[in-house]
Image (cartoon, rainbow, N blue to C red; front, side, top):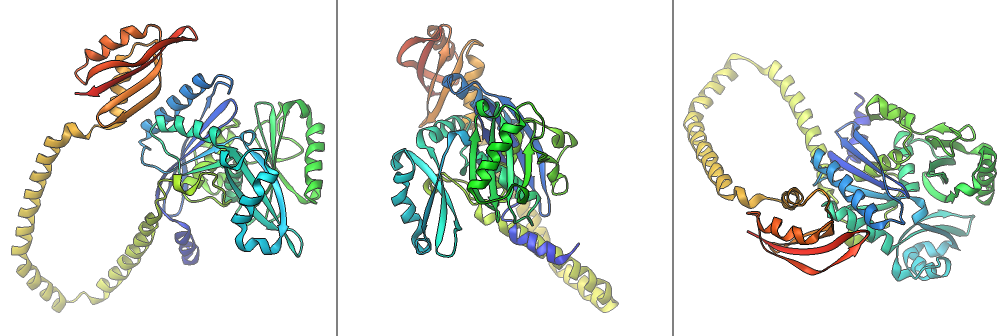
Length: 466
């Protein structure tokens, strides 16, 4: 193995472990589990789940929470860092052209200018931006915004599944992270056509930086010719020729298959990412941005975009890069020690070692005794504290086991030994006796009057832990 390549890889490896990518589109959910080793990133599993449309918010949130909770629990990813990618249609993009001197305090300038170019009050937005040179004396800033209400709606659904992402990105950035992970050396213009639900998302990058992203609605993308005209117009606006752009696509778009001769994106990962063979043939549109989000979770992203404010980011895991360095040092020391032992093995050294071992035997026996005592203490502690180590997921499992099959939850909260659940049931009055009968809960009562919604009782119940 090339030592130079190894060192570069170690410098980039901030941690070794698992990462989770969650992509939410208009009608689909994508989930991807990546494992990052010292020299390889591997896809463990990717899954696509249909979602109800945004016109059915209660059902959509229920399906989203259940799917994420099942995926996380089955793979024990509760502590893994995660990144949420939202479809481009949830976001608003716009450009600001500024004097080059504005780069010195760019964030302050963008905060001042954003209300002029985005038709939503700044206080109601989560946003981020990228910057590139625009001639000799100007810069162009691409501002990306998502309404706070939209982001919080998805974060709350994930929090019900006990998952708190450390980043929120748009699907454009997630797909770009996937591409540059596979083709890190590409610096020229690159365009992506990403189809979902009949709409087509077109993203343009250059110099490994996002410079344009638009959603072409299905009503304007009937046939490859219509898409080609819209793409050509977008490239013209960016002063880029169609022949200068490498085009890629993800799965079938608009029912026509690969568009405009664009190359498929998924096969690019065959050399860089370990994955089951069927992954490279998957045409589900939700898979690719989920994998791109997971790459961001394991610190393999390239496009520096995160719409989540810094104070809400969790699970940075910044110190885990030390593990890679320690493993490398241990490997080098082991090789050196082995070489020295082969050369320096002689009778005199062996005699000295034997004498030292003889002197150390009483200390070794004492350490063995202490180790046995420590193991016995740990066993006692485990026995005493066993029942206190239950997690929120266990109590959620207890509740769902008790509730009838025609009931489902929209909210589960555990705080200060008290549980609150909200949801829908055929007959909410039957839930109180069932929960009271459990040896896990007491003082079960309705938190508010039940109401009728969609043919079922909407309920809110509070209870205490036994």
